[in-house]
Length: 427
Image (cartoon, rainbow, N blue to C red; front, side, top):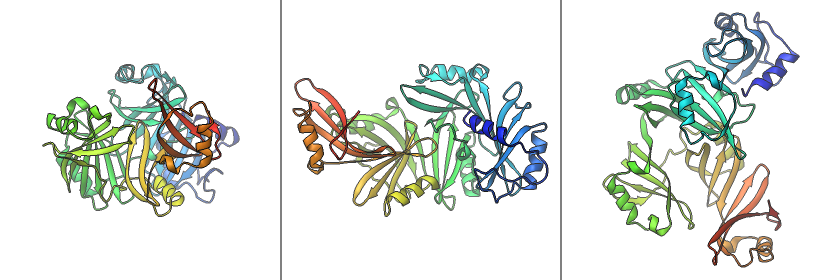
């Protein structure tokens, strides 16, 4: 459980009883008190809780404690519970179970998934949430070859979200659903009456809703007034209409010209009608194209409002580190949040992990723009005879470097190497 270490340390240093008006712990705002309404709700909902430690995070009061009454476990369990600090309303509880205690549908779904061969943490986090959303979600933590993922499953075994592991201190605060506006709620009831709402997030002047519609995952975006902007549904290659695949095959971005399909989405929009967006990879760079169901192809260009729904945390990072940047588009790719921006005339891609901690920023660099130190390092290396096949400049919390793709013409071998601006090769 991600909060277990933190909770044990807190419990070892200070134990508070659930009476009176309790102060937040020293790691948070010490001048903010947990409201009497929260304390009353907590005492009623978690009778017999032990080793209670309170903190205040934004508008929420959070209790870390041990409890024997958890719905998800037998015996005493470490728990975290979130409450609205203004009215005391319960919002979410996090606890844990062993993998062997999971619903059979969850275990079978995981064992049949692409992550089945990954190493799984035997302790599985369970989230219980308030509101008109999926009330119970299981979070499996898996890892393979240094890569870690968090897999979010419903009790009936539907994988609703996969995110790059957020780290030991992640507390799932971002997974508390927002309350949708009347317009958003009405649209969902009218168009997706039988759907199961997985998450509602009100951010940056827009509302994003994730739902399961007869087993199909869809993402809906609304503006600040609750007006529908678009619905996005990920589709498999086999689900693409013949008119779409034929238009793609006849284009300059065809597979016969070394473009590979990375992802396909079906968009239903208020402004542009319906279309399929194909994300393609190639040695010549990545491109996105738009193809209507009738087969009309054009380059995909983000429309206004693409930053709607992007969290305040990510947007603040971008504004502070890339002043003047225009957010063009954002999406989750392979568990990471990827944000495309236009900064100082350059298209850049910023990547965040599951807790929206910054991972890296990169942008393409032409060969004639590489520093002389980098060129010299390549010319004096064992790759001197290899052909240049593209380069990116990469910024990360650990430093910055150039990632250079090279190809050996004789053997058709390809390699990507990292060289710092000083001309030093990175492992």
